Image (tube, rainbow, N blue to C red):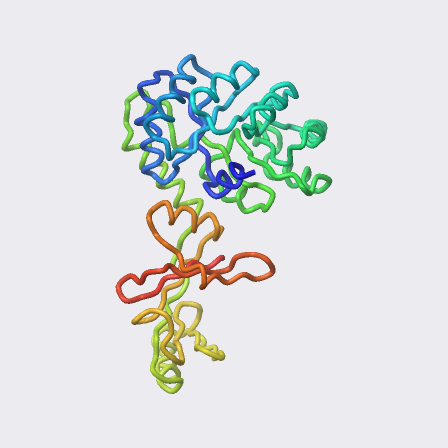
Length: 318
């Protein structure tokens, strides 16, 4: 379950086919530098095992999986090379049991209710939905989620920048597998910069980070009210008076007393707070756990530990 949780926080799993094992490390390095320290190297080429071995040895921080695993022998080769999890296009009970005996997480492909029931009978509750778009996409996942409420999905096949956020916006989808950030022509040309840029764009799309509002510290309620009226006059936005602050539209929050940050605070909206937090932690940011706000069992906000330019920053669930 720990690996499934990590994949969920990563959110997007690059599914890659490596024809030349020498390309594996620079390719996965480009993915990691673009914000995705995770890869599923598929057994669709003879170079898969050696590619996994090289990445495992040289980039140990990358969450490395083996995909398109069809046999128990391939499981053994993948695990010996350094794969931390297994993904298969279909559900082969022998392969699943072999992974379970070895203590290696497996996400098997499921396409229909019978497949899901087979997975449940084997003790699995997270499955790959493949080929996702050809099978009906998100609408089909939602339909399957009705009778199988405890099952979560990892859709792969046809996932792209146009539908990624739709998939991830459904609570039963833990992550998506995709390959658009790793075009084969870029790999053949060894254009690692392009892959890094495409990956960074995919991560930005997935996280959806955007400025939500600016909180400005004021010395007293009277000053907050006066400046709120000035901002209202400037922007033509409505004023909403609250217990501890005054909002002008949704963009400005005037604090009635000095709050976090020397100057105030800045709220950054995100599509999925735990995932955004994980990705920002990979970039070196540290969060103040004591500031976490949880509502109805779901995280709603959390502050960075350190200020930037005199402002405290917090993530805010959209």
